Amino acid sequence: MGEAQAARKVTTHTLRELKAKGQRAVCVTAYDYPTATFADRAGVDLILVGDSAAMTVLGHANTLSITMTEMLVFARAVARGAKRAFVLGDLPFLSYQVSDADAITNAGAFLAAGCDAVKCEGGRRVAPRVRAMTDAGIAVMGHIGLTPQALGQQGGYRVQGKTRAQTAVILDDAKALEDAGAFAILLEALPPESAAFVRENLSIPVYGIGAGAQVDGQLVISHDLLGNFVGEVKPRFVSRLASVDAVVTEAFSTYADQVRSAQFPAPEHWYSLDSKELLSLAAAS
Image 1 (cartoon, one colour):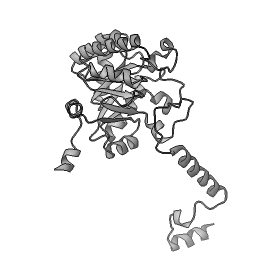
Image 2 (cartoon, one colour):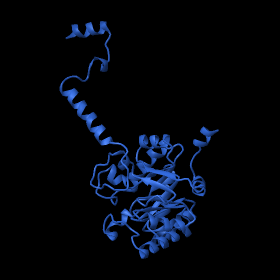
Image 3 (cartoon, rainbow, N blue to C red):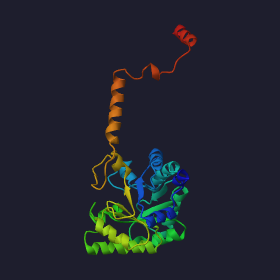
Image 4 (spheres, helix red, strand yellow):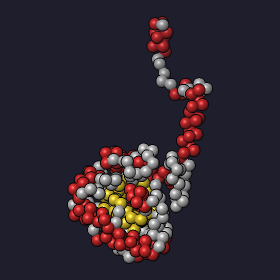
């Protein structure tokens, strides 16, 4: 019975139940089939196919340049690997801001790719888009606080909600998203007290990435967690639990040494030829 329960697909109802029970949801990003499979096996509750793929996978300096076409490739791969986890597709820059029609069409494309819901950045100003998507039957998570798609306005990667006035604005944004039908909110880069204040004034689940422990669940970028992000951004709020970069570099280095020293391939890596065929081949030469 316990194993059957553990294997049950996570839904928005599951996430509300976790909040009601005071149990924290676990969320990580994934952009490919293997990572999604491993996260799913580990019992992760939510997998975000983040627009952070622009930086973690494609090597861009920020998230603004990734396209819907690229995001859907990642989304399909992750959806194939996630059997239990709830999969969120991250709406990229300009895929929802322009019009309700764009928002519904692009969010729908994520669902068609196998996602269970979508996430979009922004508060009160994108609430009409959230309402349009939810009215179309699409589950939407809001994302406020530090919003990487608005780095130009926010002046870079800066902590939000550092004053009472700033926190009040964030709460107003959160309430607007809740009123628009969002099933959950993601808070990024807030002091724990500010994040807790927002959570206490909402009825829907509130998750955090760099927002302290007093929220309903935590999100981390898998490349930060695993130690395989190639770039300059090194958030202080992530515990690096593996050093995949060192392991992979060492494996490639060992392989290169073996090839150059003729240690690889060795006989155990070869395909054998029948002795008669070998003699025939030798005679032909």
